Image (tube, rainbow, N blue to C red; front, side):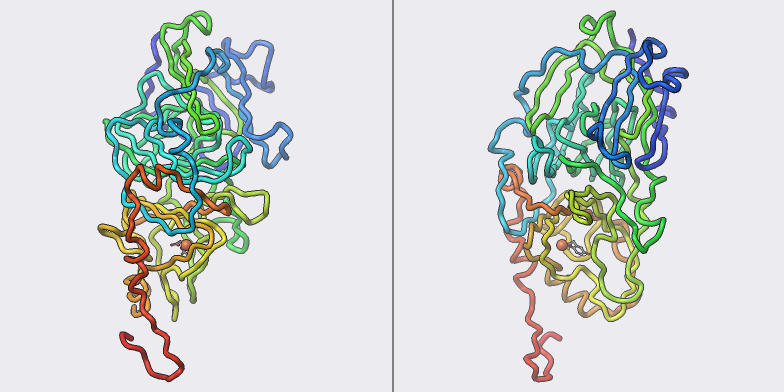
Length: 462
Ligand SMILES: O=C(O)Cc1cc(O)ccc1O
Ligand SMILES: [Fe+2]
């Protein structure tokens, strides 16, 4: 059978809402009415359940989707260990080193020969996918589309993708997602996808894999019923399918290579039918995207710099209320009006760990330029590792005239904040060759003493 070609308008249609119960059918009548698994599902489809939580998870946390597809997912030969990828290649590359040092990376290299999967590099992580606890933090750098007739899924967790450069055209079992820099997307555990780079542009960005729970919108507390990321701005694909199969599951005309990441090792199999054969689906477990430009930023209109939790887009809770395994936090353009206030982030040591990246522009607490914090680079301030503005940012803000001021125009930094101590991989520490050896000295070596010794005299430089 020929592979279906997609109409562009239909291909990038979306349904709106966060954690809503949705349904979509690419062919009218493909969704059974009033049943999930009728004796013979409509149009000769197979019904397949995909669960994202235990069957017995409480109703408000329960996540599952019913897929109506041409052939069931189980119809493939056994997986074998895959030889060829940074995430699988060696225990040493993904071994985690727990160190208290502040780390900053120059922009990671664009790679021309990799695709989204072979260009995924684990930089830091915590916990263990086999226990469904913890997370992994990645840089991806892809110069190629994933080859035709290939698909990938991760059994380890939900992947939050933060593109920094290059558009990702993602074909999923649920339909298509076009994700540009300044947008993010989430591909939940188990869902198969293929990443195409339109017009062969290179793509680079950041990703966070969540081994436990799922992302939710943060509580709004006294903010009220709207604000930060609003539920209606999250977008989910509509069903889109290909017809590529034989008369039985194992005798199709083409060979599809399916890769899976399972406990951070890659396995692969070859099947004779397209995995993108879902004609209809209904449920609340699906991939989605969000445009960061729609974030409703809130801040202080009196004094003092608030905690960055006010910039939380999505949060993955731990079992302890208010404590996240991962918060995804952004620093969008905003007005600063605080009176008698040191406006950039204060100096601090946190019980949470903070991995930061920069999608575009600059960041108000760190200078850019060579050796600074620049788009495509990153930093890590681990549990209780002191950090804060570099000397120039501090002196600038200390002496600034406190007029209302817009900061971050054209910029967007972000943070993966976690309650877990994260380890850094050999790839992150050595192989990537981007660690800035002079980070501490350049940032804080020149921090001045302003102490006045109670003499009433001002110190030099004031
Ligand atoms: O370290 C950082 O730059 C991130 C950060 C920003 C902020 O406004 C307050 C605290 C914080 O950790
Ligand atoms: Fe911080």
